[in-house]
Image (tube, rainbow, N blue to C red):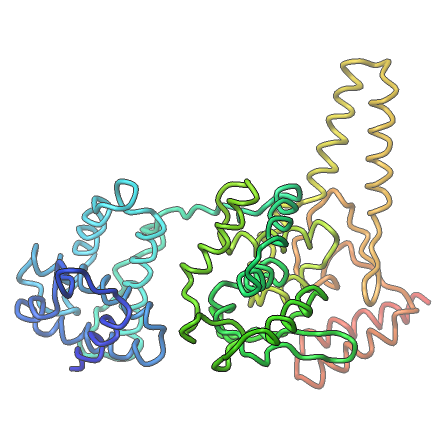
Amino acid sequence: MTGAAVLAVVDAVVPPVVSGRRQPEFTWASISQRAPQMGATMVRYLDQVAVSAEPTTVVATDLTLRQFAGRITETDPACRCVAHITRAHFEDYKTWLARRPGNKGTLAGKTIGTRFGQLRTFFERTIEWGYDDAPARVPIFAGDFPQADEPLPKFLDDPTAAKFMAALALDPDPRRRLMVELLARTGMRSGELSGLDDEAMVRIGDTHWLRIPVGKLHNDRYVPLHPLLVELITNYRASRTSHSGRLVERNDRQPYERRTVHRYVAAVAKRAGVGLVYPHQLRHTLATQAINRGMSLEAIAALLGHRSMKMTLTYAKITDTTVAAEYFRVTAEVEAAYAPDTALAASVAGARMTQLAEDHRRLLGNGHCNRPAALDCAYESICERCGFFETAPEFVPVLIRQRDHATTNEQTERAQLFTGLLDNLDTTT
């Protein structure tokens, strides 16, 4: 088996300890001695995972499977293969895992959920891949997973961000300042910063762009560069003495580690007197500032490299102007009820209602949305199916292009949608 291949990945990712290689609680050698078939199946699976997954994913899956198999073979020596694993084995492991120590007492719910997900994937794939040693059914159900917390991203409010950027502007080290400015003004991740190519800055037309390399989500992207960043990059490249092809690197020509980037950001925050700040907060701050100032969710998703609009919609929860408008409208009315003679309360309520009315009708590319501003939109990019959507004859050329595009790409349902819109317009004009 190629447990050697898996161990090589583990050795490359898990840092060594002072006394030598850390000793795991359960080893594949001990598991295979008690349950040879189970050990062989799991190691075979790990070997396949190592072909396509990130090393850290292989290490995490290795730990989960070793602990699961170790617990089973320790409590039920008669279970010697994966095909004999039952719901009872998982329930025992589930309660055992819940008692395991963690950073804050016991393991966090997110960690437990991740372990359950890795095990469920293992069972699903062994069944799907036709392993001889596969269970008859997956012994893990949706109800087993802990309810996941959904904390909102932590960001710097405008006054705090202003203090941070003012302190950053005074940083005497041009390389350090460039690195933190890039994080703050492009929203890139710290790992993406370390991977920037020396020729990452390009000019297209009148605009400079930065090519951010393949990173966490395995996609690369171009983001527009603030003029200050163009100046900082140009000056830094002209002043440095040597380089190995990266835009920024350590003096020994090695890429920066994330903990060093974290330290740089924390140092700026300390000088600014704004408490602890970490690199990802700068990413969240940029997104929050952008959405507060009217940037579309689609543009923010492209800027941050999100694969799904669901990821970007998180920021909409932070800065929901509809909630704010409704809050001030209601509180103004409440204040008016408390003190009927307050002209100020009435004027505030009137101003808020005027703002809501002005926001009531929004122009789309092929029509208008007449959804009241106080109602959240339940859709991402399918306005034409929304009950609040309306179009008019002046949008016929756009609708025709959309219909033809759908037809060309064999999107039958979408083509029928635009055909229906066009037919309705033909009968009403």
